[in-house]
Length: 183
Image (cartoon, rainbow, N blue to C red; front, side, top):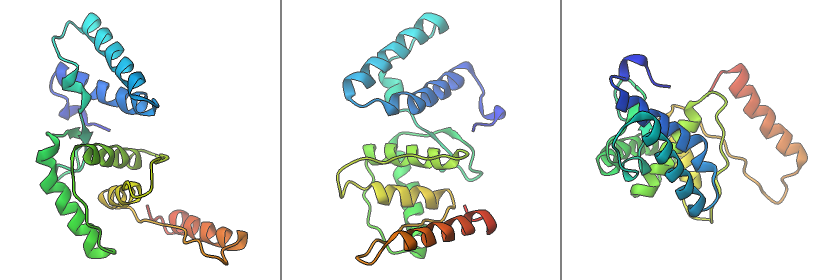
């Protein structure tokens, strides 16, 4: 997703590579012990092959994204606290067009939001968000979609909702996305 001109040095490529491997492999691991083991293994391999001095903690919370630049370039993002004003702007834009959400951005929230936005940005991107009710999965997915200029669609289940209504909802969604070309 990154442009060649945005990679200026070896360290930038290494940051990008470790970020992508963390997103593709490490994020799918189920518990913290496995994630720590993966991080340690990646650290050992990079140190042995690239002759770079770096600390593992420098890569643990590394983020790339396209929502912190005006031209939507996929770049290494600053610390999470520096992203909060930009995310507040996206939230205001979302709230202007939709039912208002009241969100507080913090480290883990920004990490998850960045991951979801990255997945939605990729071709045929999809993710299954797992967690307890009220943890913000739906809010993060809606905001990430809005950040990527995509529309949201939710199935509203009621007592009278049957298979026929489900098929109608899916038909309408496919019609809007395929025929009307709505992302």
